[in-house]
Length: 458
Image (cartoon, rainbow, N blue to C red):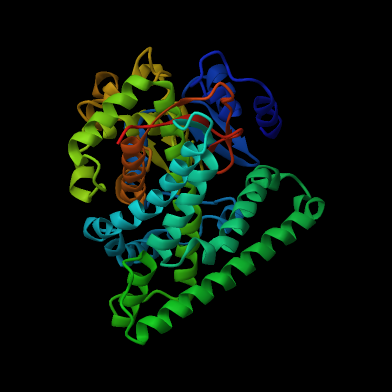
């Protein structure tokens, strides 16, 4: 598996730019191509069933007591602790405590925070364009900008601190992501902990440092709230406030782990989501124009607001299509806790269920012969009727009771950022752009996304 991944990364993309499965999931692609859709593979002594039937997948997502996260790779706990790893009553209790912080009313209050961060970025872009040779355009690699801005948003909206205060945490989590990504399959090789002892110690050290930094931020905020300071509409502040009122009973470790999840998942999801959106709109200028016309019709040149963002139908279609072609998670897996029937399949207890989300999103039986093409119009009637034969096979944030708690946060942040960009610029791909999606924890652009920004007339 590791060898096939290394080989796939070293090869140029297939002629079709969005034919990503052979590059991102080469081993699973090879297995399904050779043995069919109901095939399985082995992780050491554990059989892993590759599940591709949408109805069976929905059943797995809905029966979360029978199909659990199971034996997650221990290295993943460094990146995705807390709510993601809990099961049963422990998960239900924590989810119930955290849910109010992610309500639409609370999200509505965060839109100005999203807008402030991305307006700061756009002002810098405007300075760059005005200083360019022709004064109207400038080539920019938008990937580092989006990475930094999503960090700034997470710092302010989720934790209530500044990007500068959280810079060390972000830098350490970035390093941790690279280490975990490199070792997550190698971990199962014999004597891994001895052969890679140096990296193992580094991962443990990063985890301790991040925990201590987050503990300091939490204690500082807790002290301020006890002294009567008002919350800044950030998620962490609401959780601590709820604790102080006795509404919730989150321990210090609960809060630390949820903060780590905010920092990792929030930054990683929105920055990659936004960068692939800009790449695709740079390639498809007709859809960029349609999106801009809708944004200007709804907001003019005013700052986007929650109600207006909720009415953006063309932008919604585009964002769903981006999530289909370039999903934030390329797969997920579950574990059968007992013998189960899934349609015509008998699944014994202890079998791992591997759900290849990227492969599902590119499947021609579900999406048609144009499955690997950018066609937002397939979502014109919403998600439920997007697939061939109205099949729902679209799970960018999961499905059922355990659907991602931060999905609306990510969608509204990206809508806000995209609206602000479309109000000020039109953009096209630079000739220097090299299309090379690469999988770390999420799908990132290996060489960045270079676009030429053109300032719109006021």
